[in-house]
Length: 230
Image (cartoon, rainbow, N blue to C red; front, side, top):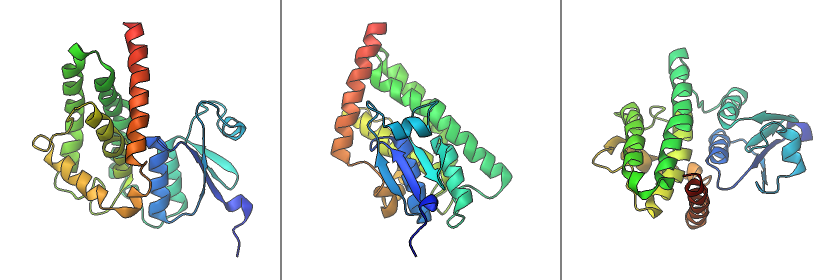
């Protein structure tokens, strides 16, 4: 039986966005079929502006004709709507901690890692040290586990995975920065290797070479803007 139009799942996203990537991962893990609509973030579509008129950002998930905004809220919506293969921890405390750490990654770790790419040369060592101090919290959190979620991929694996190994590491590599050396972050490196073995997640990751070109363009644009402000 054909799926009713108002039951269809649509995802508006951008191919290189880690936030779009994490929503794709969640849908894949749940086995939820969806229509993907690629957005041009320079010339945003009327549909995107209609569905997300306040932020005008991707990703936007559309289910039953209603838009759900913000990548982490979308992950929670997906988990509550399709209850197979749970993503969020079941216990209230563990669930709260997963949400807290996801917020920590998006608001603290990612910006610190990004600063290491755009800081003036004389300040890059300080920026790297600041980022590594924050990343060390994640090293401790995953110690003794296969994944942040325990034995299976969970909410935090999706959030951290979309941001660090599949975005951050690629960006740091072309700068010649070893942000998470194995001798300093053995558990995170072990986790990254495990993550790379999960085929359905790899299907959601942007193609490496094209992604690196995109990251380089972004870095040059932001560095240029940064120099004008200093």
